[in-house]
Length: 146
Image (cartoon, rainbow, N blue to C red; front, side, top):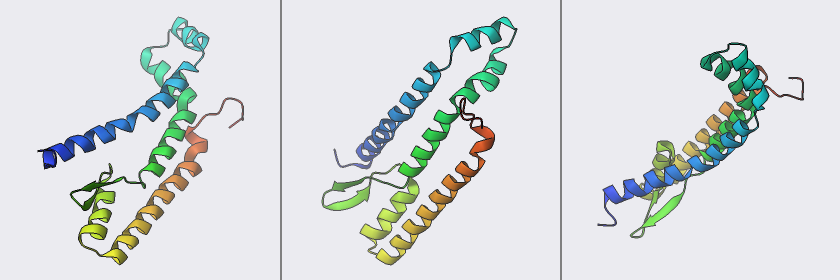
């Protein structure tokens, strides 16, 4: 039926596919922002596809990759709660969010669930701080002299 585990998995899979769109739009905009003259001059100079990818394309879209990484890490903390026959379960894309929701709404262990949520928040913040601290090495800004 509509409330079966298979139907739930299908809904969660479709929900996770829904999250692909914004990242694809960010990457599409970044790829369209690469000047064609640079690609053509590298091709004329004899650069192969892998060299063009790693020396031209990825460095030029690295700010968009950085932005998409940060946004996806931040959104990893916000799971979606859905209702099913009066029981609350997590419709999130993260198994950790699902475990927190299970502890809170099925086991009614609010203190443990809150501690897990804080630990997950600290973990996400540490990863984001790491990304920002290492971004000078792998994110290339054209006009800012980094």
